[in-house]
Image (cartoon, rainbow, N blue to C red; front, side):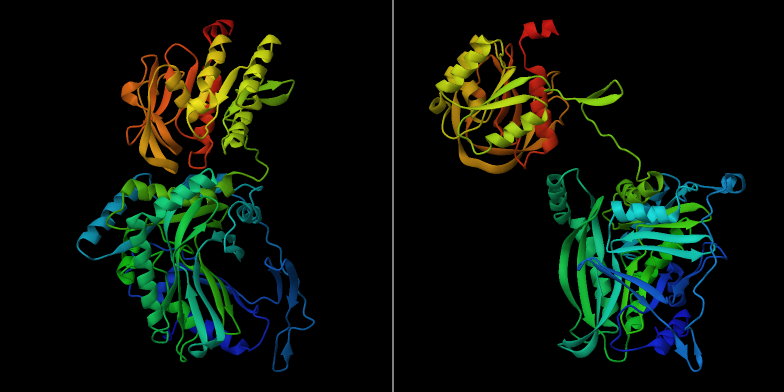
Length: 632
């Protein structure tokens, strides 16, 4: 790291301006290009470089706006620089204005390419990497591809930064005007190298160096519950664990070159970090520099992170050079601060839009192992690039109207048509702990829902509604403790049959229907209380107008029950529509009457909300008597 290079100049500048006990903000800010590593590693250059591409661009600011989000405070710092008899004090701070230039279709249109790697070719490169893994030339490799978009006058780099900051907040957000019609706009999730002086470590007064390798990725779910499932799958994924293990082992090796013996420690292992579209696993590694080394040594010894190159690092860098379709430019390098107080804070140049001559470039990579699926790795690069591409193509003013239900325009006003709108539902409460959540789900369909405690008063209320011409469109029989006979469910079902009211049951409601129509209940050998369980639809469950219509053939649900309907003793009039993996009946539907039920909780957090709502919507939509069908 001390051999002559561009960093010799950077070190000379930091030594010249070096100070102790300052504000911690003054230093060189800017970007470090990927090709800087070639000054230290013997790599054969196989791809032509743009002669205008710069490898290092750092700014010395004379004014800094500091925003401290944790304390909700902000302040400006102004600097004057003096050396000998010369000083900046009193000099003009004016500069030239160079406005953003949009893409010029007339002069640039013919040469524009939307991506540097044709679709499908990335997967071929993954196969090439796997061949290297087989013979031991590589342990892992990180290949990337570039996606390009044309920018118009309205899509300025500053607008891209605002969108990214809003939609994809990250630890290292940045916007650099690099001059010469080039800009970097990024929201990087990964620290590269951070150094800070410490006084009271086990190694005395020293510089602490920290890195946070990121490897292991899964897409965000639509809800927090789906996120939890995906986090679980990520943590349990052996390939993803191997990726991060290799990254961290190489990182520890980088630190061991310059850190005190015994000081290199993993202080966080496979920690979860959640971003706008992705979930990552992250390790945290620290070490303490030996006295003869400084922050720039720490920076250079990690150049570049194994999370953007591979391992063994030198061979991986050569493989990247040989197999990617274009030079990386700034991608895989770093951005940040080289502090004049001896500190350093940099992030990897990932999740970054490089704008050059009105063209926005988004580059994204995937960590490859022998276990890698070529098509899945190509898809991962597209997923990682999606948030950046979204910031390019979708402005903040774009309205995204997501309406899963039908919608119609009425006198210029768009109104959601919910399937339960205008319908009256009675929810009979069998003293259950989840009945109000079930009622909440039912109300989300647009229905008017009234909850009645089970017993004669509820049945009298239903009879009165019928008498008043307000017959319920459906009665929902809630879960509950005990047996169906404890709540007289058979009597309740008789009332529904008498008045031709459709019925939908949950858990105890299913058990009540099974007994009423002549079936038999059993007791599980092991109570399923708060347990997730996959259920699989039967042919009857997949039929048109089933309560499971549009759901996948297998999905996960929440079970809270000890009793169940014995499949072999199910009455002829009831069809089994779903079963669990242990063979328990999970859904039934009457062959001729509008009655159906489930032996699980559609309203639990263990059942995906979209699945639970779909079941209830289907029940409201399809459970009705024939005369109602004729009327419609």
